[in-house]
Image (cartoon, rainbow, N blue to C red; front, side, top):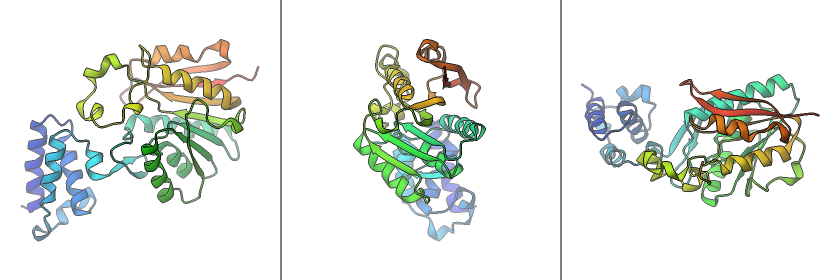
Length: 286
């Protein structure tokens, strides 16, 4: 048997015993990162090239460090992003919201759509939109300086057309010069109530930045309330907003986008596991 594949099997058992949710995938990702090969080519690594750092990586994952912090990369839609301590690791659930956003922008048939991402983190959302809709102009706001460094590095490496502009600012007050002109506002803000601290997986609460997790207020929705206010300020009449929430907050977030504040077509939309995951709404034209 190939030595590396044998070691991956042993690592899988160790990670499973440690309670890692996807032990085989994580073991293969760690091996691929150490040996600088795609996961599908691990079998091609000769025994003589086995790198013992693999077991250092396995021990870190076993101790609860996020996989993406160890490998330094995260995959999001068609992108490979650089991540690490101090920036929120993008999740697959958010990919569904980005997919909806791209479809809606195409349906709107705007020649050069103007998009704003509030709380961009690693810049996964704006980079995906810019890559998959090359004519889009995307502004991304991030107030945390450490996360902003990660976003800047990803934009510099991946934004080949120069369509993404980063802003180090609070998303409650950012971009007043765009008031009333934006076609789409999208956000994956913090939304976890502090009362749920003990239920949050250890590798998330111990390693993702607090500012990206805890939404504020007894219900965790204060940040989403700010997104609603900012979206109402930025959007042109007929523009849309999409905001992510937990699978238990759909009803509460729905009512944040109240009709009396001008919102129309408010919908709760589901992720790949068929759970409520993000709310969308259109700013009325009347």
